[in-house]
Length: 116
Image 1 (cartoon, rainbow, N blue to C red):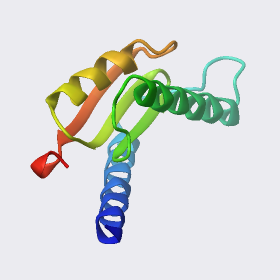
Image 2 (cartoon, rainbow, N blue to C red):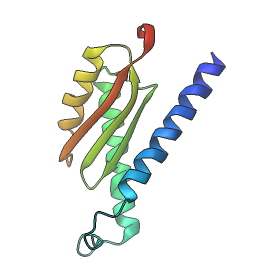
Image 3 (cartoon, rainbow, N blue to C red):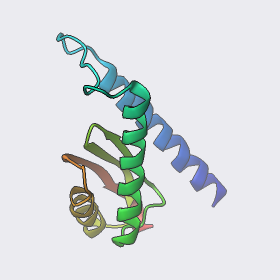
Image 4 (tube, rainbow, N blue to C red):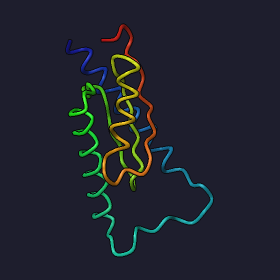
């Protein structure tokens, strides 16, 4: 059981690193300024708060969140990790989209092998 948890944490870490690298790539345009009147710290706090609200909503909505990671950036939410079955993936999308301040949801959840 401990090996599974370590594997899940390692996988989640790799996903976050990969997502971070993808988000950090230059698109050729100028850098996006922070919203007017907000410091970078305020933006980070808002993103963190939104991630937490989405994670709580998923849990309350019946999604098994043990292996689910939520990343929020400016209202755009990315769900990564694994769940037991397709209904959990569908529920996660629906629940996340209904959280206040969520503007889009990218659902990258997968089904765990054996539905575990």
